[in-house]
Image (tube, rainbow, N blue to C red; front, side):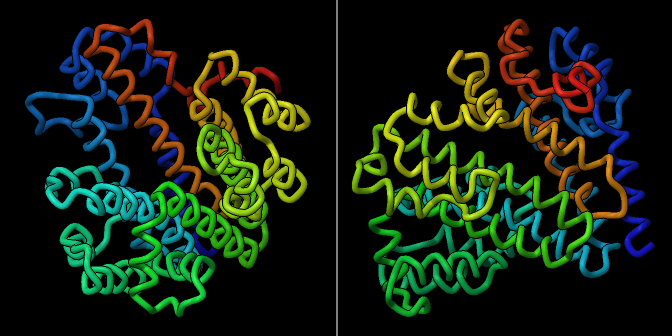
Length: 375
């Protein structure tokens, strides 16, 4: 089978997720040195061997290094179209990195560049010249022209910036003054939501062209993310200009992805809601999102954690299919959640608040998961 070795490899990686016993052992630790020793017995092995003083941020950094090394190996042995599929996974993190840098540098020329670059996600790395251009940005016509060249032309996600500018401005997208005008006057949250929308739509189109089980499985995963984005955009708009009646049907609606289980009827309804009770009323007609939003309203989980739980469920199910690319995407997403779990537990141990572990902990491949109990 084409790509069979790479798929077998990523399914082997699936066996390396921390088990329920691993988590129980970690939760018995009194300090992060003990955590380091416990993780040596897991698939993480000696990933902290060269670290003298363990901190939650270092645990995250080293765990991400391990994930990136595995991902890069998969990419190195991938042929088309798997190679392009894996590249699409990295575009998500490239958007995160560009937005991190833009948010920090557009209004703060004295930002600590070294510290800022350490915060970027290693799966979304650019050439060093791109980073230098962004962090050296000057608020001038020349500066915007260079920023345009670096981000819109020289990076894989440039096509999303180009489409965004084309939709936002009647000027030619190659006009640097259009970039200057938009970045000067637009909230970065709107830019980020727009780029993510275009990315999700593009990735889903790519998977549908691939067809087969890849198209079926990954489409469902991306639809769930699009729905989460639409609900979060609506929820976060309350109390802002985007929730003003005249803005709901133009500015806010333009941020919603044109894919998902909510699209188009649910999206049309979301564009009219003005408060949380109206949002809850709409989501009650969608059983999955009714459960998620109920958890949020009761205070059982943050809205993000409730969506993480749903995403973990879908990504676990992706491993039950065979001969498709969904497991590659799901592996990365589940590893990200495992790293969030691990860092959160470490934070609780450091703060001596282990009783709060379940606040932001999402089980992965657990027999105690709610959806497995319901099977």
